[in-house]
Length: 270
Length: 285
Image (cartoon, rainbow over all chains, first blue to last red; front, top):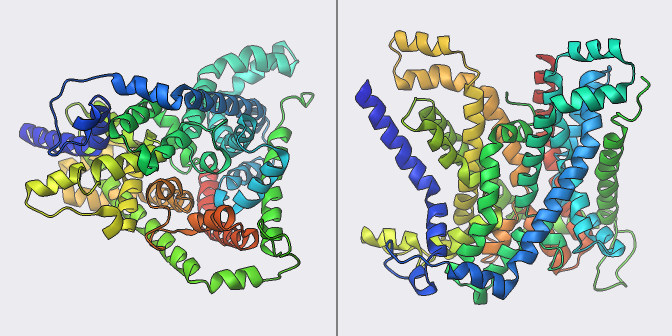
């Protein structure tokens, strides 16, 4: 049995290595010189250099795009949480006959394919001067993530025992106070991890960001795609920019994998 | 009931507007003649845009490509996902770390994965795959010229395989240990266990993974936008990319909207099944 476990572990790690290889290879390329990055046969041993990371900033103003990604994902998340918390709270603690229907309906809005509404949104944004603005993307991402945020928060709130709420109501009949001083502290970590999930999803979203931004408000997804033009083909620099764009969010992703399942399967899998 | 501050109204109202506004607008645009470049093209078009679109070979190609993308990606991710999640369930050395390693690609943004694969791995001269093929004495493959759609399928599958793994792992955690132990005691081999216990238990999770991917992959865009821009010819133009091309490159708003409506209809068919499943799940709470 023991040797069996060893064999299976080796198999598992080989598969893991293959799956992870593109990321590993990218990080390695980001530490090479441009010549080493395109060398054939590929060079596995080289003297690492951080030069690419500096060049990426100098040549293409990487920080501008990173800043846009941060602003957009953080504010859209805050806005979504702000709208979602009261809603999830009332669904969880004051369910009515229609609560289930409302929850399912909310999820159904998430199933609208963006491509189906691209045209009116594009024209509307064009007329309102919202194209290539932070506000424009923040609004869309808030709406896009709202169903997921409501859903995940709802599943957390539902796990808070009703008795706590009832006991609190015996003491004090101001629901807002109960909410602020008892329920909110209890669900702090739930709200926090839901926010992280939302940030990860927004950070990587690349349908709206590619279609609605150009430079001013373009986040990292759009920045990376600018490397697809032939003159931008500097592999080491592309790799450095990509590494910077995904590493922070990958850590967040690892931390939020449980919420990720909850949020993306919309409660279909527990 | 005193507390109106804590209500679901804001959420319901904004989502209602977000859902209905653009939908009505898309239907409207799909029924008129509207070209951004030529304001003289105007008036009510009826089903003209749909007729025009449905008889356009680019459209039929794009439907065919969309279906191929959906089918292949879902097939690959579900089959490999099941095998890998089963393997991860086997108490491996460093299993928890291995799980993190395997789910990592899911957090790579689509534009990054597309460009890394296209250049660092699939480049016909300097790519790593070319080097690997060379080790075995095989000729290089010009991925995006020879099998453009296949290349995109590979990239998106790599991105989404971790999602399938993650969902299956979560679902199998609800399988009771007793079942596992009992079948081990009965001497059930891996094959028997996998097919008779593991698969049936994950039925629902597989359904969810399939349907969710159907909805998400209808919108595959960034990967195509950054690698092939729909080509060569129409070989990698899917429905999403066709709508983009018609609207933002050809400025044909009417035709693009008709394409949008068709994708909404398709997504809704899938969504009905998915929502039913979710509603059922809520009842069983």
